[in-house]
Amino acid sequence: MDNLENTSEDKGLNFQCNLSDIEVVHSMTQLLLHALATASVDSTTGDMFKSPASVAIGMKSELSGYMIQRSETLVRESMDGGEDHSDKLTKASSRPTEFLSDLIDEFVTSKRGMLSHVSGLFSSESRLNKIKDFMQKLETDNSWAQDERKATAWAILENIDSKGIFHCPERFDMPDKLAEHTSQCKFRILNCTYDGCVASFCAIHIEKHDTVCPFKLLPCEQLCEQHVMRSEMDKHCGTVCPMKLTNCPFFRIGCETAFPQCNLDNHCSRFLQTHLMYVVKVITRQGDCVNDMDQRLQLLEKEYLFTFSTVNT
Image (cartoon, rainbow, N blue to C red; front, side):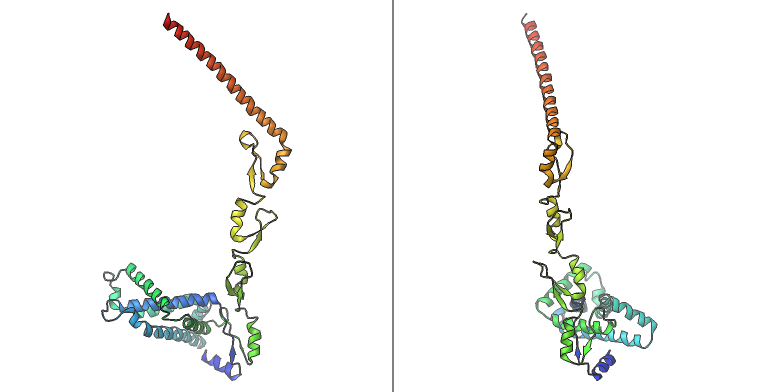
């Protein structure tokens, strides 16, 4: 990569576009912070004279240098013609976070103290809790600033991302050309234009965001005339949507028709006679029940009177 940079500078291309995929870079910066916390905790486990905080500063420089050096080595070995290294570079350039995770595992393993391997002295759960707590402390104390981690992540990306999938490799000989490019670069930052959404993303992810943005207005899924925010669609369709299916008010007495609730008045008007017939049938059945009950009451009264007269005689 140094040779490529020198070649660019020799040609007078001194103005480089520093834009990149912010999602990938953010993931890499978080991995780096977690790596620092892990290496600091593991390297001081069981050491009464050292703490994670006491080694973090030196560990940070060593970790950053190791990551950049290893990525440069991979590129150099790939350019030297090694097929195996070329395959590794191809994988690294397509999955930079996985590549970084592998490098981190190598680094952390090399820094792990002897006592940290003894499970009886340092349980897995205890270790993870210590790493989590120390990572929060590093972030709170700004021990490894976000901009510094971004610079390390950028350097790694610049080394391995030979196809410019995750960062912009463009260079220019004049600042105005760089400015013109930056306004059109596929890695330029865009803000979501939907009301209420505060998301920012690279231009290359605009379609991806558009498919998930909760604030985007969409045509109602039940084909009413309204446009509803994606996040409110289920609620709209299940409550106030005029096209929500509802049962006829006379459902319990015989009309089993379901229709959009906006058609309620039309349905009731259209099937007025049918509904009245259902009502008449219900009243008739109720009348029959009343007659049956009257007859049973009369029989009970007769039985009672007969029993009463028999007892008295």
